Length: 317
Ligand code: FAD
Image (cartoon, rainbow, N blue to C red):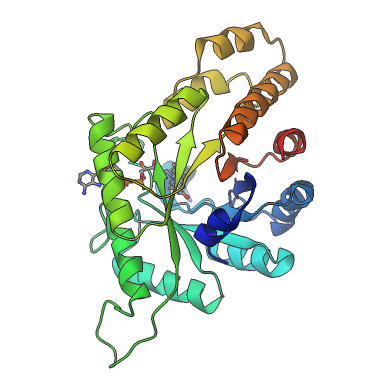
């Protein structure tokens, strides 16, 4: 089923979560174990992230560290298919601009279509860690909207080359990312929402937000989007803090603020267990307020951890 139909048909707030494919060489069973822990809370759909190649330093035959491009977490499409088949739950593989040309993207979309996967989340991919800039591959897309347009074209049967008179149209439901605290590269919220609206006009059916730790940021964002004429569902994304170091890691990596009240409580934690307990309680409070505001779903970023998400789901859904 398409995520937009799942969202629109729901009578109460749904639970969904995002998984990362395992690191190269690791076992798919670890992913199944994560899903098994969350299954009792009836996930409406499961997202699977996509990871571009990264430069890592590895020793060459002379033992000298040299830069090598590797995809540390391959397997998004295979994993999505395996999950959908094993659990009969709708999956939402992410498709990214970074590291692909448009033809490779089209091939990936054809794979998904043949596998019976009709949901995707179209995102640009992160900027280069060193330059801070995003550079598309030759023949690839610079912005997520270009990806949305490509999928919309394919949904109309418009492939990159004119192959035959009536090529088979695909039937993808497209989700896109939104940023309650604005995207870090955007000059301001207005500009970011302007481009978000363009993604919706290009064919995205719903928006999933970046993590946030203060619901006011989400409510203000939704308000601004509605005033800008964005009418599609905006699914809040939550990440429970699970280690003390998240205090510095999350703002640095995701450009999000941690409210002072949470910072103060986290600073008092002596162990990561205490930090995880606090992070979980905070996320439960956030989820309860979001649920009572009537959001269609709450989406959780697991980042490989299921126990805390399971406890939140048990308390909220
Ligand atoms: P875009 O929508 O392209 O926006 C990027 C920036 O460009 C924004 O500042 C926007 O305002 C601006 N912009 C957009 N269009 C234009 C235009 N036409 N002209 C000028 N400026 C423009 N990363 C991964 O690598 N893999 C994943 O699986 C993944 N999943 C994610 C899931 C969610 C829910 C979220 C919130 C993020 C995810 N990311 C993922 C991270 C994402 O790739 C980064 O946040 C990236 O920096 C931006 O992606 P985007 O799709 O929002 O980009």
